Length: 136
Image (cartoon, rainbow, N blue to C red):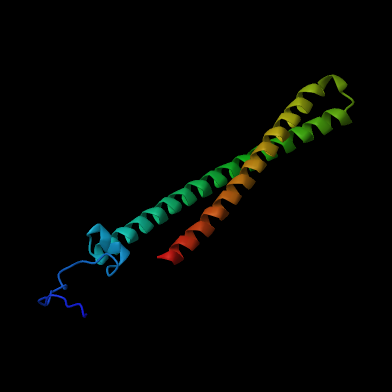
């Protein structure tokens, strides 16, 4: 015995949106060009944020560098005063220049570490910016 199937009229499948036939971006209902523009806008936004952060970190580095030089120069002046007092055998006057020199040296050490931290941050941000710029 042979099975027979009822005859079917031709069905037009061209109007059906089969999920496996559409690109993933089209699932949202947006045309591919709109999605690409949205993604490009997001990348541009990320790049602008990185540029701002880089400028801010570079500015902070420059300020810390400037302050470091000033404090280091002040420490050098106090060192000269200390050496002058010691050369005159004025032990009673040693405490002020010694204290000031040490305070300036501590501050300079802190500022130098800050300059190094900002330099690393600037370098990292610049490499991230270059990476993301190549992604666009």
